[in-house]
Image 1 (cartoon, rainbow, N blue to C red):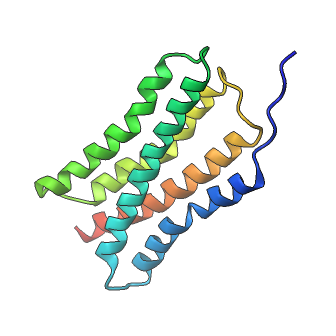
Image 2: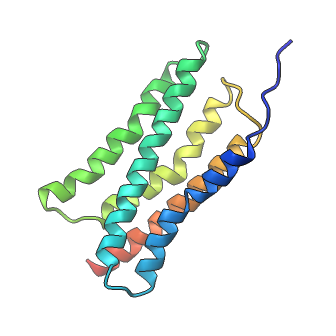
Length: 155
């Protein structure tokens, strides 16, 4: 008999949603018409890239903790870090940045629960996991898209 996992802890939910605050602050700075628009865009890019990479780390840990997990999860797990690095390179080369890079990160964040949806077919996760993942990914991805659109409009 398989024992069911407990639902997500309230602390996980609270801190998960609190993780949207840095990006919300960047959007606020952007929409406020502040002189800090560049800092808002660059900071929002950095935060989105870090969180996207963090998601890959979660997927890697899920696969490592479950020997029956499909091997494709490892490839999916390294993709966010590589994509985040790729979106940083235009800045280092002096190309158009951060608008296109923010848009790529926004798309990746918004699509990331699709990977989780495949993972839960093979690995049991706490109830509420997918709901949290959709809320956080759509929230962070949507705010990152707002930053991207603003940056592209200024370019």
